[in-house]
Length: 73
Image 1: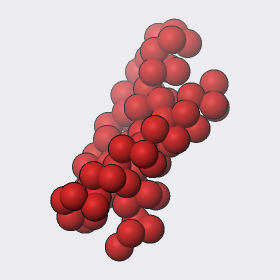
Image 2 (image 1 turned 180 degrees about the vertical axis):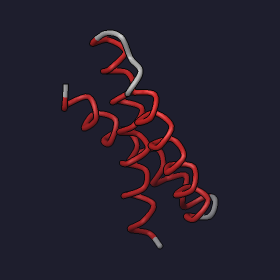
Image 3 (image 1 turned 180 degrees about the horizontal axis):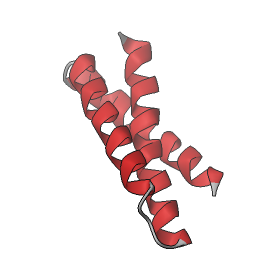
Image 4 (image 1 turned 90 degrees about the horizontal axis):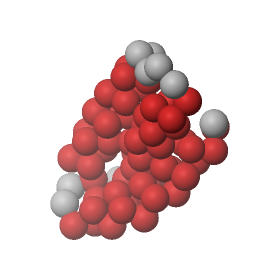
């Protein structure tokens, strides 16, 4: 289950790193914090392992995007 977040972080580094070059890195970090916070909150209400994996992947997108955009600032 933990690897779902790592896959999300991998894809986020590719997508949000490029996006932070095109628009402001601060805007990308704000988007990623919102994404991570939202899906971490939703993860507390899931009912099965599939939903848990999806929420972990999407939260991984947020945390991975924060890391890749944060390095550029």
